Length: 347
Length: 284
Image (cartoon, rainbow over all chains, first blue to last red; front, side, top):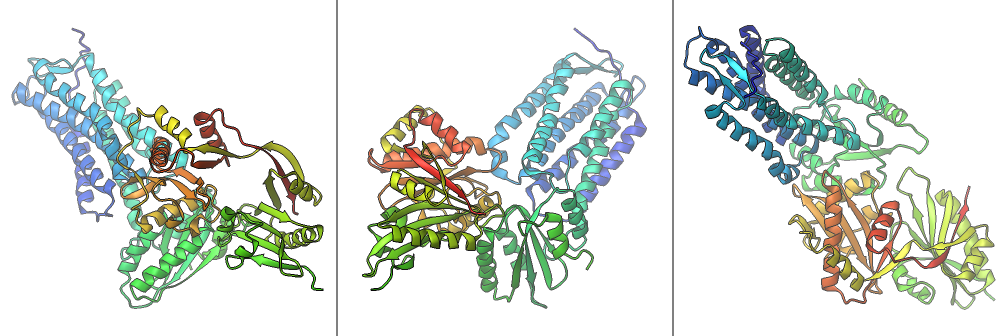
């Protein structure tokens, strides 16, 4: 039997730091208000799995080694939980990336069988390993050893990471940058942790993973600062960011809808219905209590008729006097010029 | 004696020009970007008519005009029509006029008015429902998923949401006025869509002309499965046409872009369009 004989005694400080970071992210995720998006629920599951892994990594540091308390069975169980939590977390990462970029449950369901295959294989292998030690094992001194199959096990697990990168890259190629999300910020700490674990006896992966989750959480939370609580649309702070993105060529506005909202009216139903009728390729910004704009990307002149009918229809249905007008980008106008001419930032 | 009179042909007076405008074209005259010009002689008899369509009018791209039909019984009527057409071109800001005709005389009229013409294969190919049966049989092994439906029961709001997506992505197929057409304008039983998350993410919209000819007007799909879904949508539509129409029913496919051309080359390798004259004139 091929034995890599790479004993890693968990570094308590590193594992404690990872567990604390993940605990913090978990608490913040639970506390954070929900946007109602499907990806949010998956993110919570992902954080729970990462937290369980970090805690397991911390706990096992106390039970490994000949001098440590606890039985061999206990150490094996905790290590199994640790390994499975990493696998499950990466599985949820793929689901999270998928739902973040596509926001479509059916697309995911149609792929679920395929996505489940590595997970099922790894769960079965983990269970078999408990009794056979074919992937990793603890010797009589409760020292950890990896077998050659561990590399294969890891590769199967990293399939999720590769699929997540593939989905993200494909989406970016077809649709441009996803809002408030980038997979690269998540990958860098993971890769750093993995390399650290290869070259040192420190449990770098757990720490790298925790840092990746913190970064991802911060990235997602950024959106909250730009969101108007009452309407769920962006707030005026977003205009500056939007202007930068337009200057950078990430978005090309072609059409602007300006709404004049009635004062002292409950507009929650209007905002909800407006979200339903607006196309995906737009941003709506609530400027103040009575003014709101929608910036639409793409050559959209043909939309004016349909959107006018829809906005009038929901205004009538809700008995609200919503005034609105359009500004269309002229053929010889650049998107930047069009935006700057019609939207006063900070005004 | 009264001079010849130039009139706009609208939905109201199309019947006056029924000998000059085909029934299939007549029904387009109420549409957003279609225009008709007619000439009446001193006895108010129609002696000339032309129908044209503005292309890219609802877009930031340059506006062009496609002349669908031109009929004239004498030179005076021809000059009147071409002169009025020239005015319309400049009013609409079109940069180019285009036509496709199988009629040598009409081609001569256009070339004498500054159009450059050449003979080439028509973009249209005509297949029969019987030939579609062969296509459906070729792919009989493919199981069409349950999320591919015909559009008989498609709620209008769901259709409108999809239209917005098409318009924003510039996918309007043969229909410049896609955003203005109701779902009922299409033959809903052979128009097929793919659904995900209760939203349409792909369609094949088929129009039945008054002459009973079927015309696929828009084939497009979005989302992660778009390539797969396009194939399923086409197959389902072909199967429905085979089921619902006699074998001799004509289906006219206009190969207006490289994607459609590739598909028709694949499914109908031996089909060619008729030889026609295609011409264009710079308008600026």
